[in-house]
Image 1: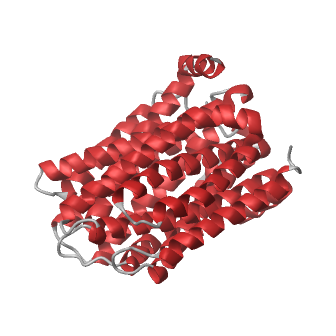
Image 2: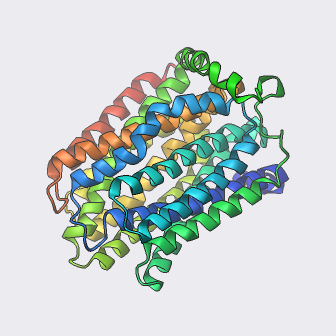
Length: 420
């Protein structure tokens, strides 16, 4: 099969393998860290979690970085990306360790959130750099396949990290601090793995690097305007980003719903609820893997926008059919289907952005991409807080998400002929 042959070629490329190892370790650590956060904020026995509390936590963790993210993107286009991976992961190792200490000493929630916010901010910086660096280690012919393997493998690594975190938490007396320290160790390993890559391999071009921080910061505002102007001139990339943002919003709203169902509707015990949530995340991870296998074939025949249209249309039909019973088995099936659909659309979007955007702007565009992801997730949590009852069962929310998926489908169908 051509896909298998191309995959073997990719895995023989040393730079691609090493960049992939950095992603896998970084995102495995992210999975560990996210489970520790969810366990501490949502599933602690002493906390009576509500949709509003989840929305507040997401806003505290994601919204401040969303406002500052584009400025970080401009720096990402001026700093060597290998160094971003090295120092970013080292910084996250330190911050995750500090967060573990804060859990142990039972500090006020706001101080815990400040520490967790710092880890999340650096996380988005690193992920944007990984996407921007990928075209430097593969050729254009195999970029779609590389986009299928790399981000999806990273998502699977995050899922595996989450499973490992659950095991550690159950084994060590439900210790969220121990899970945080495990994440710190993985961040440190990712930093060491980045040293296997040549310092200048991942770009940006040497002429664009500004080694002095003051000079880079002074040009941030001008660079941001330039990045937005560049995106406006690249209609393919802009359209894909808008569609993916709406689909991410839908996925975020359903994630909050599953959190509440796991916490209150499906079981009375916090440990069982956390296990059910972990199972849902694992099933969704299997959907991500299926997307990695299916998307190169589907996008090759339908084009990136055609594949995104199919994904959104399938979600519009299947999401209410599986979600309205509010039962564990249909919801787990929906987790797989929506994992496949969301990741498949993301792979297509990554490819469109990478091929439509010039390398000098990729860092800031991918940072903007991450900002849109964050804002849409925070917005989804806020909407879910207004619509969800305490047990998580909300017919209006499920129907609203289906309508949004249908709207994306129609918009992509109308715009597809412009880009094919």
